[in-house]
Length: 361
Ligand code: PMP
Image (cartoon, rainbow, N blue to C red; front, side):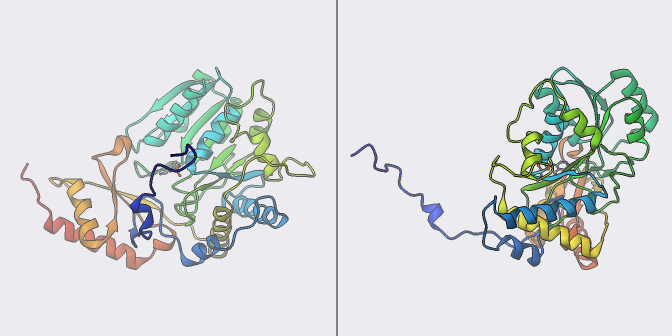
């Protein structure tokens, strides 16, 4: 046999037609995508550097400015999931050896602490039990003590079910020359947030939750304070793909006359994201997203979830990270945010409670 002929045969599984079941996605994301957004994603693709694509990206930028309630010029969508935005925020604004303060009351703070540690930051953790809340006084004391360049807080803690207040924290950070970074992956579009009025320096979200687009893109915005820090660094960010010097040019935010190739953006994902921003701009809806429910005494949460999946074709999930075993989570977001779905979810829960075993203990 010649060295240039294939010896691995085509796998039988890939020759079968694609199977993707219809599901009620009542978990903490992704949520069901409305036909209108699926149709936008299904349009024939165009080149990522075509002028029409740049127009679409400009529209996306304006749409993100609207949903974030910000005038920030440095507003883009990451080619990647929420984690891409988390890494982009940290990698660009922090240099190795600098101090970062992370509020941890569920899994998302833990993740950001790890991301910052991996790039060599000096990470300080403020830890509460899942769903715990940090007072502004506690935050100010920790900022004074650790003198971070960046303070991270999760607005919608989807592993623990808490919507953390943000008022006043941006002012504390300003006073102490620190940037305020807020994660709204699970809350943007469902719970109110006002980036400029609340003095948030860096804000990001994901496409696949309350925004109702498929997973794979993540809006992020930096204000002037954040830009000043990230564009006056001594070292280059550890990631080439997430380097905001390049991304700001790709998104037409750097004032240069031409955009040059950096990476190939997810064209279909941007079509969908644009449509999802249009849906919000039309409806201006702001609704609760992920509901956490304490597991009823005596029940096994895995059994309840498995029963609901088997008998009702419905995804609900357990806790995540530190909230595992504490809660069950129901996401009714965007397309799924209808009374009929809430009734269906309640009916499924009632049925599960009736039919799953309850231990005496
Ligand atoms: N932050 C929060 C609050 C989230 O709920 C999630 C997703 N569950 C993420 C970040 C990470 O987003 P992704 O899975 O899109 O990377």
